Amino acid sequence: MPPATIETVPPKLTDMKTWIERTGHTKLRSYRGEDGNFWLEQNPAKRSPWATFAKKGHDVAWEFGAEGGYTGRILIDGDIYAAAEATRKFLKS
Image (cartoon, rainbow, N blue to C red; front, side, top):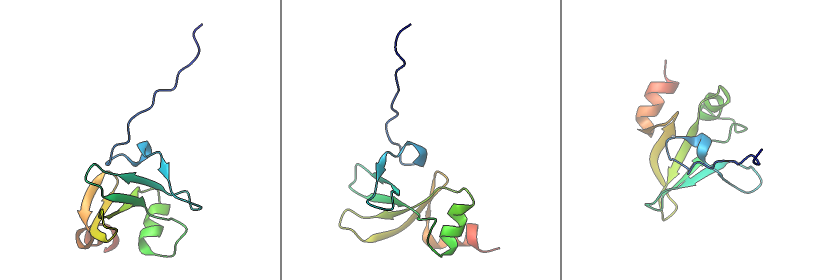
């Protein structure tokens, strides 16, 4: 029987489960797009509404531009939202 092989799936922005890069001591998932922008997983250990949302099983990541500043976009469960739109949709009842 041939040895088992592990297929690697290239990371895809909208599927955080494919992200293989991890940050320093927090080990949060991250992704760098072809445009140079950097996406960072929400730390569920933080005390914020978004951390609470992530603790409930949602994939949440924040986008930072190639120069390092926050772009105002959030990836939630595979879809990209403006911060205000995401807050209205997911955090305001």
